[in-house]
Image (cartoon, rainbow, N blue to C red):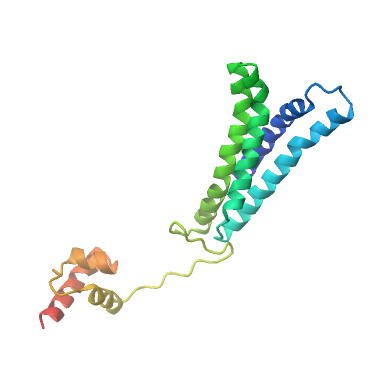
Length: 197
């Protein structure tokens, strides 16, 4: 998945490079110095974009949130690529050219936004862990083996959640303690007897 996304991003940026070169060359004579210099514009923008995307992907793997400058750099480079690709098409008022020159930068934009989240979620799935939103385990962290919870631990959870006036039912015990359906009746009976006493 990761390789396919990055291949799509690189192909999209390669497609945009020729459009940006012709935009930047602005009719300069072929092989002249301005014509050669125009070839530098798109790689300059694309390399910054790729560096930001890779850094964002690496930090997401460790659960580190990047700041506004990172997101701003990504959006600015994507917007710059889009504008330089479509400028002539909009100037010519050609809907077909606008669509043709819009698709690759927009695919790059969507893939750039999705690739970090996809890799993060696929990593969690490969490790067999369920992670709540906003929590990210270290990439090499082994999930701790699940320990069996004892009857007393479930009962302690229910005791700490109980307040006067609470109707102690098996459903309530399941909700506050996380115990199984089969155990909840016994826990409810024990706790109800305690609170009556």
